[in-house]
Amino acid sequence: MLEKRRLKRNRLSCFLNVHSADNDELMGQVLDIHVEGFLLMNEENLATKRTYTMKIQLPEDIPETDSITFEAESLWSAKKFDPGFYNTGFKIQQTQNETTRAIESLIAAYGR
Image 1 (cartoon, one colour):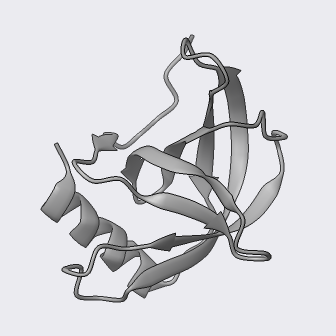
Image 2 (cartoon, rainbow, N blue to C red; image 1 turned 30 degrees about the vertical axis):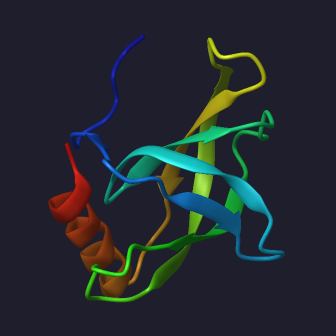
C-alpha cells in the first residue's frame, strides 16, 4: 500500500478518548496522532468518507485548553487483529490555531 502520509505519526504514552461532539458518545481511543490526522481504535466499523465532529479531552498539563473540538474525515477503516476492534484513519479538517497548538503540545509532552 502506498504511504500518502506527509507527517510522522506519534504514538502517545497516555490514553485519549474521542467522543462525538454531537452527543458525547465514546467513539474510541487515539492510537497515534499528528496535526493533520490520527488513528482511532474503536469497537464499531465506522463509515468511511464521512465527516465527524469530535471532541478530545486533553490531559491537565496541556496549557492551551482542556479539550479540542474539530471535524475529521474518516479515510479508511479496517478490522484489527484483536477481536471486536477496528482501526480508523482520520484526516483532521481545517483547524483553529488553538487546536493545532494543543495537538503539538500533546505530542511534545506524550509522544514516543
